[in-house]
Each structure stands twice: as C-alpha cells, then as structure tokens.
Image (cartoon, rainbow, N blue to C red; front, side, top):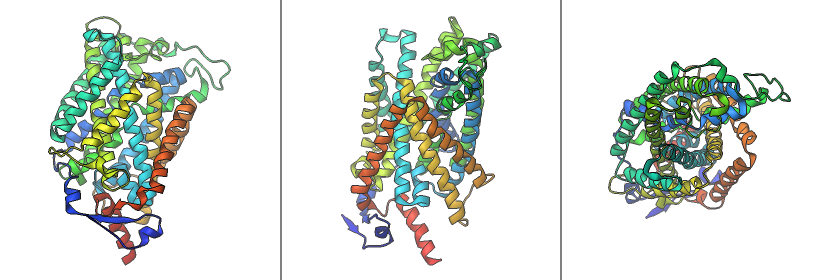
Length: 481
C-alpha cells in the first residue's frame, strides 16, 4: 500500500513522490555491516584490475606509447581528484545509490537519474567487454578445447551471477581472494618482464607523417593523445563503484573513503608498471591489437603460462565485482521508483535478484559481438558522463550546503573536483573520436531512459527510499533557513 503526497515543491519541479509501506522497503533490504575498509579497498581494485591485463593496450594503436602514456598521466590525475571528491560525498551521503545519491541531493531528481543512468550504462557494458577478454585468455590457454568465446561468456555470467545471488558476504570474500591472486600475477609479470625490457620497443609503430606533432614517440601526433584517453581510462574504470557498497559496510562514513583511496593508491602503481613493461617488452605495434598483451609480451615459457592463468583470475575479478556494482546501482534506482520497482526486490540472502539477472542477460548478448575494444569505448562513455555529473554535484554541494556534515573533506575542495570535471568533459568528447557510431548508440539509450523518466517514472518516485530521504531532508532544511 502506498500513499501519494499532496502537490508540493516536488510537483512544482515536475516530479511526484509517494510514501511506500514498510512491507515494500522490507522486501528491498541489503545486508548491513558486511564490509570493512580493507574489503572495500579490495573491491575497488577488483573493479579495475582486469584493465591491467587487457583493454588498455588498444590505446597504443590510437596514440602510440607516448600518446597513451601522456593520456594515462592525465587520466590518473583525473581519477585521483575524482576519488578524493567521491570520498567526501560518500562520507556525507552513505547509500547504495553511490553517484546517483550524490547527484540526486545536488542536482535534483533529473540530475540524479541522469547520473544513475550513465553509471548503469557503464556497468552493464563493461562486463560484456571483459567477457570478450576472458574468452581470449581461455582460448590462448586451450582450456576445455574451447575455440569459440560465447560458451565462455555464458558460463562466466551464469556462474558469477549465481555466486552473487548467494549473498554479499560470500561474494565479497570470493572477490577479495581472486583480486589478491590477480595482483600476485602482476608482480610475477613485472619480475619476468623487467629483464627483457628494451626501450626501442616503445616506438615500433610507424609514424603518420601527416599528423600534427608526429614523432617516433607520438606516431599519430597530438590528436593521438586525445584518442588514447578512453583506453587510459580502462586502467581505472569503475573504481567509483566503491560507494555503492555503503549500505553493506560497517561505519561507512569512515570506511568508504579509506577503502576507495587505498584502492586508488594500488592502481596508480599497477598502471605505471603494466604500461611501461608490457610495451617495452612486447613492442607497441605488437601489443596494440592483442587480446592478452601481458602473456604475448612474455612469449613462451613458464612465466608466460603462469601469467596467462593468473591473468584470467584478474579478468574474472573485475567481471565479478562489476556485476555487484550494476546490481546495486539498478537496485537503488528501482527502490526509489526511477525504474520498475520489481527490479529491487531482494531474495532471502538479501541479494537483489532481478537487478543481478536483467543486466547480465543484456551484457551477455552484447558480448556476443566479440568486439571488446568497441564495448570498452561504450562503457567509457557512460563512465565519463557520470564523472561530469558527480563532480558538478560535489561543487554544487560545497557551495550550497557548506555546513553539511562531512566526516572526510576533499583536499583542495572544488579546485580538485573542478580539475576532474574538466578532464571528464574532454574524455566524453574523446569517446566520439574513437567510434562515433557506437557512442551514438549509447547516447540513444541514455535518451530513452530519460524519456521513460519524463513520461512515466517521475510521477512515481518513492519518497521514503533512503536516497530520496537524503534529498528531502536537505530541502526541508533549506525551507527552515
């Protein structure tokens, strides 16, 4: 049973909210207090670690080593600023909606839903891209005699969605172990690769003499730096998902900021090691189209075989954890009424059943294209759009609500998040440089979601969902002032 609110400020802004029963919310509860900061740090690394094993290297074809390296430095700076901004937002607004919750408080229902939609696009497509890379690693190992990736994609989705349905505690512990193995694999790769490093391998891509600023280190000139940005993002993509675990975290005001900052520290190191050593050992040209670059860089031998097996663990870690992320984002949007409310119903283990299954089916169908680089760019588009909106949210809340309780405060304040905002805008444009058609499809999907909100769901928001309550509390305080 639900009770519709009388016309209010919400109606004046073009949305209508109603209060749902306790039974409605009881069916949409996540398990409380499961994770500490160390598990969250593991979750943050897990989201991203597959990007070290495959995907980033496609940027070599667009910018060469120099272009991708410069892009990686810029993007590393953006993500560091982004993470510091999100640490503050997550300490102030700890809810399962993550970026959607932040933008809902700062930018209203339209801004909140736009942010949540962009994140959902990112997290639905990213596992599909990772599935194609898992397929490449499995085929290179000759496991089970598989030479056609779709069996691998199907098995990965079925197995890991099944584990998530068993409950968050079990899922996060499995993820933590897999992530530790993946990091061990990167260490083994570094030890094996460092003795084979040859600086001349960094410049094996032919120079485009017609490109402005072209040189051996920048074979496609200055524009190549910009075109390489989406692939540099793959080194860090999805770390912003850590706040999605806020409702399942003990003491989230402290543990979420600690976890996301610790994860970012680890990823900065792995990015530098993998980019330099893989290209310097395997050669820029050879690595630019590889589905398993770390293995191909090492060639044959025990080290390569070991990294191949462990690389598979790294890909699985990100695949596994991003399934967690998309389910929590969809859960939050559904619970608040932005998307069909059946999607947020949880099972007896407090896992959102349809929020896990529906995007999984969509992702599996996308993975059948086998176009990992194409899917990567589409996921980056959704991510970059969400970054723009989240950084705007941080700036707005700093200006509009300076006294809002913030257990953690971003060093540098809006200067830090302003920098991330500028780079995020550049990243959005860069995705169109790589493949305007694919990104155009993402834009069409984004527009369809917003149309659904405009026509239908904005009249059916749930006022007593946690994310809406955060925003309503702020509005009530503004009225009192």
